[in-house]
View (cartoon, rainbow, N blue to C red):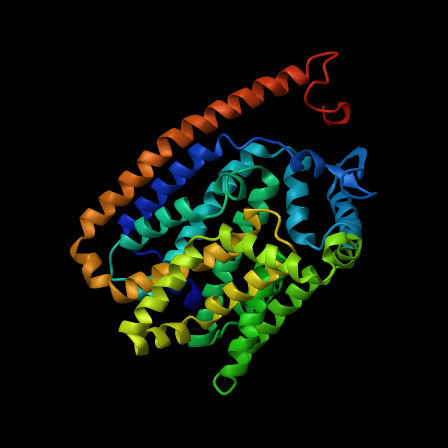
Amino acid sequence: MIQFCKCINIKSYNRIILFMGFFIIFFLLNRFSPFINDDFYYAFIMEDGFGNSITHKPIESFNDILASQTWAYHNHNGRFIVHSLVQLFCSQNLISTFRILNSLLFIFLLIGICKIVRKNCLNNNLDIFVTGLLLFLFIPMMGTSFLGNISCAINYLWTSCAIIWFIILWEFCIEKEIHSKLTLLLACIYSLFCGALQESFSIGISAALLLYCIINYYKVNKQTLFICILFVLGCCFVTFAPANFSRLASDESSGFEIMNYILRLVRVALSLRVFWILNLSLIILSFIKKHEILSFIRHNLVLIAATYVNILFAIIIACTGKHQLVSIELFSIILLTKLIFSYWRNELFKHYYLICISCCLIQTLLYIPIYFYRQQIYNAYTIALNRAKAPYNQEIIAEEYE
């Protein structure tokens, strides 16, 4: 355990101050995340199906959550763990606690990405500024997927954080062995847990891990292989849930028609940004530094393969919103940042202060109007909600949600 903790230690006080600054910035926006949309739905026990499944019986205990999600696993979708957490927070109306935890998990996500990127970065804080700005600019529908309601944030931000730290665990196990039995047990449980969170993340990572183990079978140790198998098992749990097959059978657009898949491909392609920047950069650099780019691809095989598999999965399932592409853009952000620090770190270090100031300036110029816009929308929503709760007024919410 001590060995792994040393691996994730944050030594610089300057870095701690920067992470605290990002926490405050994110929390101030998170203050305006309302209890809305699916949050009402998940506050009640499910029975009959999405839309008409509210039983008018609020969740009152953890047993109610288990019963609700057991039904959902067979009828709604396979995200048993994620939606159990969602129902826990929604049923108890823990919106204030959620805002704090959500902000903390964003910082853990940022720390995790910087931990992955830092191998390619000089010993300075430039990775924090660059990564923070890229997340702020390019995470699909960040106001919804990371800063929206309880349901969206747990599905995407919390899962992103868990997956990034699993990747750190995976890379640690490749380089070193875990000697403590307790630490190994916790690592195994965590691997299974992460694999079972969200299929839009897990499928790509699972395929990439298996590909890595096949290509490097001669040097993969037993611990690494075991962690890979457990993650894949978790992925199978969430992906092959009976509910997913039921929904697929009832979806009229799920049949194989070439035109449908072409339209899905176009929709996904037009929704991605960092992915295309990354690929364009790799193509251009391959003409200049062919051997270095091949080495980059080889050392980042897991993330690259996971990105492409997740794109394929998004096309197959008929992606209906940009928030379903969070994993693709997140992995692309990590890869692009690693690429930048791999081949231009000396040039970046020469202009260290200019880049840091530029990142801060861009983020400030974007942050201020977003903050006041979210505040305005949240205040309007609060007024409307209070009006709906007034006697004899059902303007906004139904009677069973009061």
